[in-house]
Image (cartoon, rainbow, N blue to C red; front, side):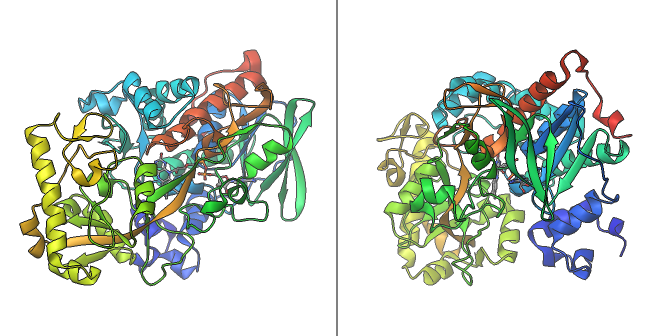
Length: 553
Ligand SMILES: Cc1cc2nc3c(=O)[nH]c(=O)nc-3n(C[C@H](O)[C@H](O)[C@H](O)COP(=O)(O)OP(=O)(O)OC[C@H]3O[C@@H](n4cnc5c(N)ncnc54)[C@H](O)[C@@H]3O)c2cc1C
C-alpha cells in the first residue's frame, strides 16, 4: 500500500494502538508506527549532506521536541540558519505524548468562545501552583496568548477546544479535535523545518537524527558550539547552542540524575521516553552552568497499571481530563481519600498515605463525556468496563454497600455545594470552603463536581475503571535560565551563546508544574531563545522572514 493511502488520522489512531490499523504499512515494513511516520511522512527526501557551517549565522538546536522545533522555526523566521540535532531515530521526544494540551491566556480561541481570562489571572494561578520566579512566570504567561496564536496562525493548527485543568481558574488548555495535541503541534513544527531543509537544500536548515550532542565548545565563558557523535564519529559544529534535550525522568543510567537527586523515586515507573537522561543538564554542568531544583520531580498520580504487566517500567498516562469529567479515585477499600481535582503532588501525596491498589472510576455520564479515551484505554488493556457497580464491587472484593456509601457522601457534598457554594466545614482548593469530608480532612477540599451520582444508582450503574499508580512524569529542575532563556553560571551570570528551553531548563515551574504549562514553556522559551540567538548572531541583519516562503509553499 502506498504511504499516502494511510491518512494522518490513521497515524494518530495507530500512535496509541498500532494494532488497530490492520492494513497499516508499518506492520508490513515491521516498523514501529512512530518510526514509520517519521521516515515516510517526514523524511521522504534523501538526507541532505552539508558540511559544517562556519558562516556565523547558524544556531544549533539540540533536541527535536516541541522546545527544539519552536526555537528552530523562530531562528528561521528571523532570517537565521539552523542545525537541528536529535539523538533519537526520529524527532518529537516526549512532546508527542502530551494529550491534555497547551495553556494560553487571552488567546484568539478564548476570545471567540467568550472565555474570560487574563494574563494576570494565569500568572496568579501559576505562582499559586508552585512557581517561584515571578520574572520567568511573567514571560511564560505574558507570551502565552501570542504564542498559542502563533501556532494556530503559522502552522494552520486546530486549537479550537479549551478545557480547564486542575489548578487553573479559567478554561485555558488548548487542543484540537484530533485528540493528540502534543503530537499534532510538534509534528507540524517539525514538518516546517523539514520542508525548509528540503527546499533550501540544507542552506537554511538541516536536521540530523541519531546524532548525540555530548560536549560544549567553550572559549572562556562563551559557548562557541558543540561536538556530537553519529555512527561512532565525532563532529564539531559552530554557533550559539540551544539545549532542548528534555528532562531526566527516565534517567536510570550509571550517572543518573534521578539516582543522585531523588533516589527514593528510582523504583517508580515513568511516563517518559528513554531519551530522557538529562544529557543537556550534564553537558551544561560540565562547563560550569548552574542547575536548579533538580530535586523537584513531578510524580503524577495516574499512571495506568496493566493488570497482566503490573511491573512495566514505562506506563501510559491517564489523561488529566478523566478526573476533570468526574472520575473518582478510590482506595483498596472502596473509599475516597482526596480531592480528585487537587494538584498532582497533593493527590500523589495522599495516595502514599492510603491503601493500594487505587482505582480511577468513571460512571456512565463521566465515561460518555470522554468516551474515546475510555475505549482507547480499554483497548490497550489498562481500563476495564463493568456492567454495574455490583460487578465492580465484586471485582474489588468490597461489599456493594461501601461503594454506595462512598458515592452517596460525594453526591451529598455536591448537592450542598450547589445550594451553598461558599459554605462548608473544610478548607477548599484552590480557595474558600468545601462540604466534602473525604477530601476536606486533607486540607484541600473539593469544590467542583461534575457527573456525580447518588449511592442508590451505584448498583446498576455501568463503570469504566482503571488501576492507577504514581509515576515519574516531569522534571521541574534543570539548567537555570534568565528571561532571555540564556543559561546562567554559578555566579548567576548569563553564559553567552548557551540557551536552554523546554524541560531541560529549570526554575520556571518551581516545585510543581500545572498541567498544560510544559508545552507552553517549550513554545514560549523556545521562541525567546530562538529570537535572542538570532539577534546575537545576525545583529542588524535580523529580518522578519516568512516560514511559508522559506518552505516553498
Ligand atoms: C505522557 C505525557 C503526557 C504529557 N502531557 C502534557 C500535556 O498535555 N501538556 C503539557 O503541557 N505537558 C505535557 N507533558 C509534558 C511535556 O510533554 C514535556 O515536558 C515536553 O513536551 C518536553 O518537551 P522538550 O522539547 O523539552 O523535550 P522532548 O519533547 O522530550 O524532546 C527532547 C528531544 O531531545 C533529544 N535529545 C535528548 N538528548 C539529546 C542529545 N544528547 N543529543 C541530541 N538530542 C537529544 C531527544 O531524543 C528528544 O527528541 C506530558 C508528558 C508526558 C510524558
